[in-house]
Length: 261
Image (cartoon, rainbow, N blue to C red):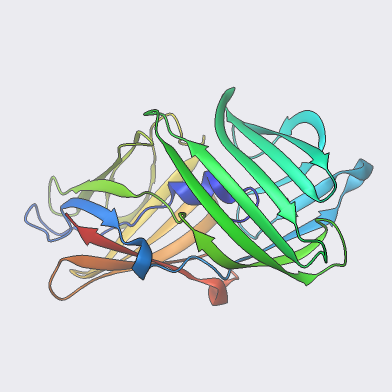
C-alpha cells in the first residue's frame, strides 16, 4: 500500500462478468493471498507550498501533509494527522467522517533507501485489516521526499471476501460485508455510484462485460478516472484473476486471485 492508498485501493474489487442468474460469477469469493501480487507500484513525495509535503501516485489520491500534528484534508471526505515521534519515523491517523479509518507507522532505514509502512485499517463491522509494505527509493536522497517503488506487500490488496449476486441478465450486485459497501449496476459500461459508509462521495464504477469469462471495469471519483482493471475467469470456474492498474502506469499492474467458496 502506497502512502495514502489505504482508502482508495481497499475499495477496488473485481467486477465479474454477469450474463444470467446462473452465471459462474455468482457466489462468495475469497482472496488467495499466496497467488496474488501487489508490489511494483510507485508514489512520489515532493516539497509543496508553505513547507508542506505533497503526495501523488497517479490516482485521485493526492494531498499535502506535514508531521506537525495538524489535521488536514486527505482524500474525498477524509482527513489525516501526521506526526514524527523520532528521526526517520512517522505516524499517520486517517479519519473518515470523523472516525478512525486507518493508522500507519512508517520507518525509514538508516541509509535512507528503504521505507517500511505498517498500516491497520478499521472496518465498519468492527474488524481490522493489516498491511505491511516495503518500498525502495528510486529518487531523492533523504527523508520522505523522492520517488518510491513498492517491492514487497504483506496482507494487503483489497477485500478479503465479497459476494456477487446476478439478479438478471446484464446486471450485477456486489457486497463487501466488512466494508458495508454495495453496488448494483448494469454490465454495459454505465457509471454506477457505490453506497455504504466507506464509499467516498462521487465514487463510481462502470462494468463492461466483454464475454462470459472477461469483464473490464473503471473506477472514478467525481468523474476522474482513478483505476481500471480486467478479470478473467478460470476454465473450471473456481477462480478468477483481477489485473488492476492506474491509467498511465500500465507497467505497474497488480494482480489479485480470488477463489470461489
